[in-house]
Image 1 (cartoon, helix red, strand yellow):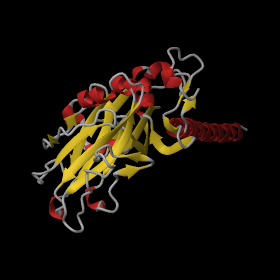
Image 2 (cartoon, helix red, strand yellow):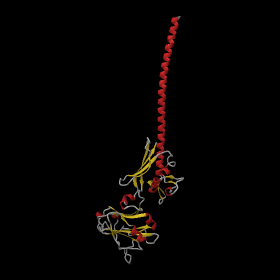
Image 3 (cartoon, one colour):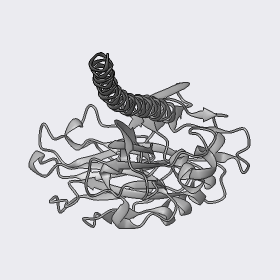
Image 4 (spheres, one colour):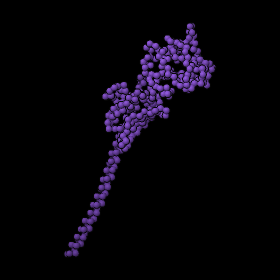
Length: 336
């Protein structure tokens, strides 16, 4: 009887030890599994959040690029309540948006009021962001706005290629030198006639003829108002900048104030505000003429631009490449 009870107790002891070991193993496995599930859950939550921020950043970038904002002229407003910013340039002449062409005026307004216009309107209040519009041309300075916190662990970057008229310029006259000959010169354009003619109406500004290597004039009209002089600097620019034609000269005048005063090109942009102002006088609007004389030698041919730049533009900023929208990198960053 004693031996039986001893054997029975030993069997119970072995069973209890095995059960305890099994429970320990199960507990360890469950613990490891729970930790792994917690890690996987955290990663899923992080990836879900990161993807959400990624979609938010892409949507915000597309909204800025593809829309002019609400209202369309928001950049001219003093109060931004109810404003949703957008940077797309609106072509009022052709009544439509210029695809992927950004308005410099809208860009500058966004830069000056970045946090006010972005937080709660384009991105949530708690989201840090920055925007850089960097011209492909290295001679042009990038525009940067906004700031990403230094404590941000991850940053979503959206990169686009856009066009931007960096200096809000206007080309009033473009004379492509080699294009003209005595038959195609613009001495008579759209009903306007070059004011340089004799008493019986024969033109004294005979057209240049590169085909037959004959010297002469190319004349083209443009319209100016006193208000334009208050906001625009008018520059006369040649391409190439250095004019090898020693006979080349220019005149700006009008029918009411015709002159034979010629001016040489100076191998750099020429500010002609005073010449234009003298021509306009007290008139509310005036049709002026740019006259360019050249020798007719194709090897010395040059193009001529009369262009308007924002008031106060220094001569070193009056560059031909600023006359057309410039390709730029649109780099939008959002912190996660």
